Amino acid sequence: MREGKNIVEVGSLAPDYMGFIFYKDSPRYVGFEFQIPADLPASTMKVGVFVNETAEGILSAIKNHQLDFVQLHGDESVAYCNNLKEKGIKIIKVFRVDDAFDFSVTSEFSDVAEYLLFDTKGKSYGGNAIKFDWKLLRKYNNKIPFFLSGGIDSESIKDILSLSKLNLHAIDINSGVELSPGLKSITKVSEAINNLRL
Image (tube, rainbow, N blue to C red; front, side):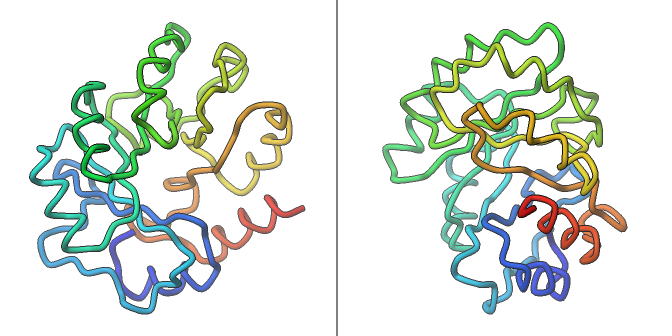
């Protein structure tokens, strides 16, 4: 999210989390003048999305935007994450999944991440609009609750019932509910939320 009016509109649907991308190479990058509207519901957690950012850059964004979580979408190490955690920062660590992904690497982050996020491995760090084979999640030990991402739209949410026995915490919808990069369709977001509640 990055457009003020759109943020408020989506916020009125009371999502649990809302993401703001601070990665300059993303088409959804918020930019230097970005401000989160003050009337975003307090119940919606503000998540800053970063890719191989410096700790100083993350701390600055947290201070400027009162972020509740940071989503680390790059190649951040356990030591890097631990450094942030020691500063009281709550972390969502992202892993990009394909058929060759080794889920055992997630165990290293069990003491530093509040949540994991599994996204589809593609050309970009995220926003590839492709759904990976969710059957691969059966290889995950489910120790840390996770977010599911990757090309999810209102229709594919119906298939998430098949994951009910896993430690699934949240669904990350992005490109599948967009009108253009960074601009969400209120109709599509509403449909996705309604389908989750069925």
